[in-house]
Image (cartoon, rainbow, N blue to C red; front, side, top):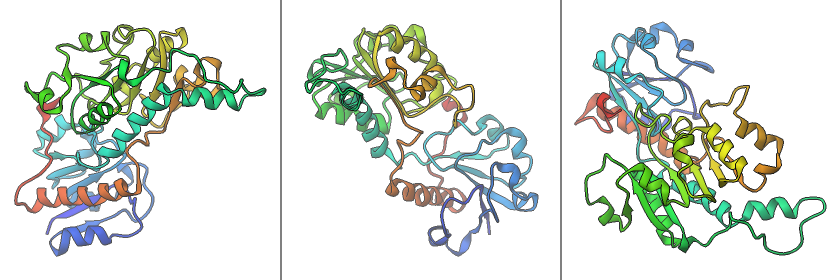
Length: 336
């Protein structure tokens, strides 16, 4: 009977896990609170054939404590916190849960974009100022009709596809860049495809980032790349913090080249001091951020329904890996 070890206890009971795994899998949860894999007893690690990871990182040295490990399931979409090279050397499968929270993240990305582009935050800040602004619209480059904008998307996976369909519904001209997709994806979606990242950026008014964090995408959008955006563009990132240079965002927002920024992710999470200038200025309510900057705490994925999906879908994925009929959602090392 294989043993599946959960690195942290995020739910009040084990009823869902017992139902999904059935009597053929032994499920073990931590006896108390944990802050890392180091808090898990050696005796339990030694027996685990499946390891469930939500927040923690897994390094090569951690795997030494798991001699029987066959599969690691990242209870989420991103898998950048797992050492896939070390796992592959041990023939340990890396799994993820790509089909939870898709609509939540897509909605969140659109909410960030539309809140900025419709000037909701500008009005919000000015109407609660002392004294409040005049009772009239704000004439600002941030506010722009959807139908005259190109909504550019970097990456075109499940979430990005959902975003593209939403942006189309709002009347944007939608274009994406993803060098890994076969020809014709754009025809099925009824959107445009840019041949290069530079070509996308040069004509994008509202940019939304949706790539995984890999060696290829880390620091993909730095000051040089973001400066290619037309003056008055906005940037939304609900993917991973290290994909976009947060200091470049601060520079371009402060200078006025960018009209707005909405981010759900930052390079180091949770943030530690010294925090990036963009976050420091946001918290200090500096003038150049007011109404133009939204920061949410990696919460785009969340709804009670999505939280439940993480639980059930990750258990189903691990069960398929250990008991068959065949593994699902396997992330290969060469996918970097």
